[in-house]
Amino acid sequence: MSSLASVFAPQGAVAEDFAHPQFTAREVNFYYGGFHALHDISIVLPARKVTALIGPSGCGKSTFLRILNRMYETVPHTRIAGDVLLGEQNLFDFDSIVLRRKVGMVFQKPMPFFKSIYDNVAYGLRVNHIVGRGEIDERVEKSLRRAALWNEVKDRLHSSALGLSGGQQQRLCIARALAIDPEVLLMDEPCSALDPIATAKIEELMVELKEQCTIITVTHNMLQAARVADYTGFFMAGRLMEFDASRVIFQRPARRETEEYVTGRFG
Image (cartoon, rainbow, N blue to C red; front, side):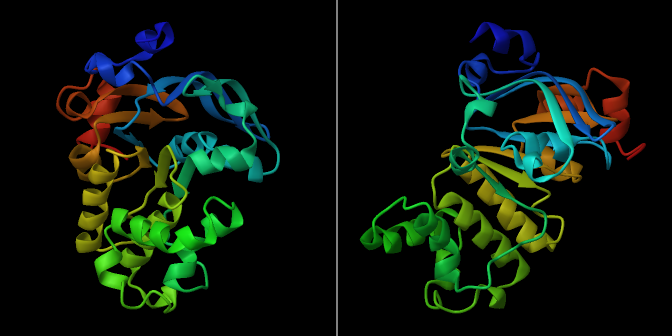
C-alpha cells in the first residue's frame, strides 16, 4: 500500500484493495463561482471495486464524481484546488479527450443518440479511431454482451435505439461507454428513472463489471448501495463525513450523522 493510501484507507478496508488505488484525492476544494461546493475532500478509491457515494441532495457527491473525469470543465466559472491522482498520474495533466477514454460516464437519464443500436455503440470507436473498420462488429458485440444486452437486441441492431425500453436504453449507454475499454465507469444515479426489474439488471451488471473496470456510482438508494457497493462514502454539506467498507457504513458507522442518514432519519 502506498503511504498516501495508507493514510486515507478506511478502517474496514481489505489492505490489498488499496495497494494500487484507482483515484487518490487530497484536500480537494471546489467552487461554482463564489459558492464553495466541496471542502477538503481526501479519499482513496480502490480499483476493480464498486464504490457508492451517498448523501442528501446538494451534498456534493455528484460534483465530486464529475471531478474524476473533469466533466466540471464544461461548466463556466468553476474552480478546483487540491490534488487528484488517476493511478499514479496527476489527473490534471491528462488531455481531456484521453482522460474521458479512460474514465467513462453514464448519466441519470438514459441518453441514446438518435442513431441505430449498432451506431450508438460504434460511435466512440469511429470517432476515436480506436479499432480498424473490420473490428468494429466484434467490438460492438463484445460491448453489448458486457452490458447484458446482446441477446435482447442482436436481431435488431440497425433499428433505432429510441425503440428500446428505458432499462435497455440505459444498458445501451453502458455498452457505448464500455466500447472504448475504460479503466473506470462513473455512474450518476443510473437507476433513478428505471423500474425495479430494470434496476435489478443494472445492479447485477455493476457487480459483474467490476471484474473488468472500476465502478464509482452516486445513488440515493441506500439498499442499492448496500447491495452492490464494496465501499461507500457519505457526503453532507460538501464534506466527506465518512468512507469505509459498505458493511461498516450500513451496520456500524463511526459518525452519528452517517447512522442517521442510512437509517432514514433525514435526507
